[in-house]
Image 1 (cartoon, rainbow, N blue to C red):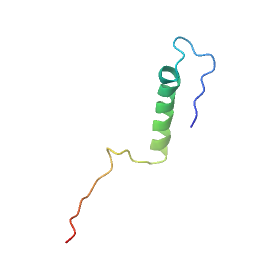
Image 2 (image 1 turned 90 degrees about the vertical axis):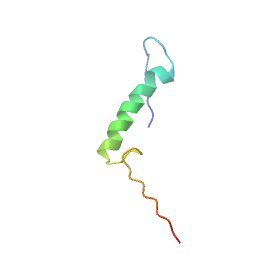
Image 3 (image 1 turned 60 degrees about the horizontal axis):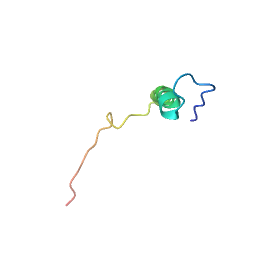
Length: 49
């Protein structure tokens, strides 16, 4: 995904302008696609002998 901000106001750095937009859109898109976050995934460790 690419976020382009045309004529940003204030600080014109990608980290302060485009990154928050990317975060919000990506978060909603992944939720819509039912992609679990790492925090939601269950990890099972089994020992093999």
